[in-house]
Amino acid sequence: MTATTLEKASTSDNAATVEFRGLRREFGPTVALDGLDLTVRPGELLALLGPSGCGKTTALRMLAGFEHPDSGEVLVDGEDITHVPAHRRDAGMVFQSYSLFPHLSVLDNVAFGLRMRKVRTSERRARAAELLDLVGLADKGERFPHQLSGGQQQRVALARALALRPRVLLLDEPLSALDAKVRLNLREEIRRLQQELGITTLFVTHDQEEALSMADRVAVMRSGRLEQCAAPAELYGRPATAFVAEFVGTMSRIPGHLSDGSVEVLGQRLPVDGAAPDAVEVDVLVRPEAVRVEADAEGDARVVATAFLGAVTRITVRLMDGTEVKADLPVHEAGPLGAGAAVRVSLPERAVLVAERANRQ
Amino acid sequence: MARLNLWRWAVLAFAGVYFLVPLAASVIFTVDVPGEGITFDAYGEIVGADGFLPGLVLSLELGAATIAVVLLLMVPAMVALRLGAPRLRPIVEVICSLPLVVPPIAFVAGISTVLKWGPEHLSRTPLFQTFVAIQNPDFPVVLVLAYVVMALPFVHRALDAGLRAIDVRTLVEAARSCGASPVQALVTAVLPNLRGALLNASFLTLALVLGEFTVAQILGYQPFAVWIYSVGGSQAQLSVAVSVLSLLVTWALLLALAGLGGRSRTAPRG
Image 1 (cartoon, each protein chain N blue to C red):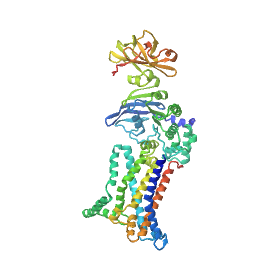
Image 2 (cartoon, rainbow over the protein chains, first blue to last red):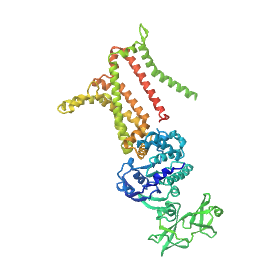
Image 3 (cartoon, chains in turn blue, yellow):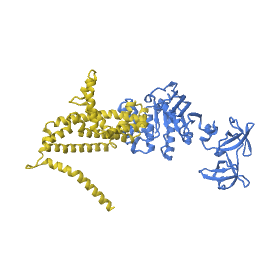
Image 4 (tube, rainbow over the protein chains, first blue to last red):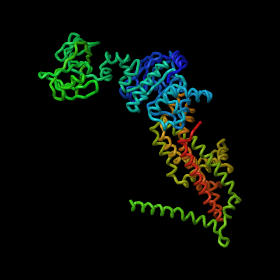
């Protein structure tokens, strides 16, 4: 189940750079892409993350050649491929739905691209067998797609996408139709293969956990634009915008007053991290693991709900003004804090992220 | 439950009687010649009968041509419709269903009017030759054109059902990303998965052409159905024998089709 050294050498040498420049696309009244600029570095796995309708799939399909931008261009290794038809783009793609050809055996599915390239039968069967071995399905070559499980089908689809040694690998939510366990396995396997082959990969997903755990960098998109593109740790720890902060991971908003570059929140005065908004009434954005909750009979906050998550317990606390804050506590600390318990909420003495106050319903 | 079963058997028996009695009567009529006892002479005579072979050959030729034209027209159109303009689908469906609403007699009245009007008004243009050519009695192209229109509802339905069962867009895109041109994608990825639908459409079209009488008769050609009718006037027994035979042939085709369609899922391929 390891890629041959030969294969590795052949792909990582020409790992491609992908560039989107000012991509714009409208579908009737909706703007799918509103000037997208993004560069994917050679050999990296970049996840396109965003809510549905943010244009991430459209961007991927433009790289595949299935959509065409109204304006802007797509470059691979500096070469403009905007007008190159899909079948000459040298991009392997794995689709969200099962896309195997139902009338062909697994082996013939993997060999399909080689057949289109007019590779000799013996050669393409050998290559297809090699790829099936790579995805751990060497013994399933004679089966038909409908005889395989969902996870196996996506592995075959991956093998098929890699068969032509593409310069770019495109994954369009390949795991979203699978159940949780299979998804985790395949997630690791895709990452392992991608790193072994050193192939530039674009991965579309709406699952932030998937994006953070697999990708070298994550590009968060919102209504057709790029919000932030950064390594997972940076994205989580230092989100550039309030949207990224709230989309990636869990964030609570606590009202505060901004003055002189610091913010007053929960009776504490904390420095502001990054650029402060131009307002006095602001929200402080905090991760559950950064919120401290202590039992305090004098405290004016009340526990509303608790949820056991394994290593930690997530506690939802309602502050006096009605704001709900989520906090993760080690299980032994959370033990005595049942719903209704009086608690005191505080933040660590660190710079905090601040955003303009959101309108509350 | 028992009562339900009884009803089922009753309905089955009634349907059986309804269909089988006329059929049995036809068979008996053809084999039981008064004064000669049971004889299969009527069936033997068919092959030698005047006009049988040319009529059948003409019908089969017309059937093959109609199938080719209607599939070449409809398959790319339906696939393109699915991929590019799903909103036009209801419109196409209505248009393709029109031949069911227009009776063949009205349809052929229109055609014959055009065939008379055309040569008069176009006598000085090259189109005149076109009108002559499509009415060539050896191979009346005009019948193919008419049958293509008449087969549209059946072909449309069969193909639509077939296309509904597969994810055309994903199949085409998967093939394209594997380096297939649009035409290659259609031929290598979509068509093999439409095999059942294509067979169905072809069979329905063939059955329609073999049995079509009105248009051919009024335009003055003599394919199989018209021949059966004309022979009926003089040799009643022979014409019924031909009817029984053509029914059996149709059944055989239907069974063959079911066999082919049933195997398509598991058929191993190189």
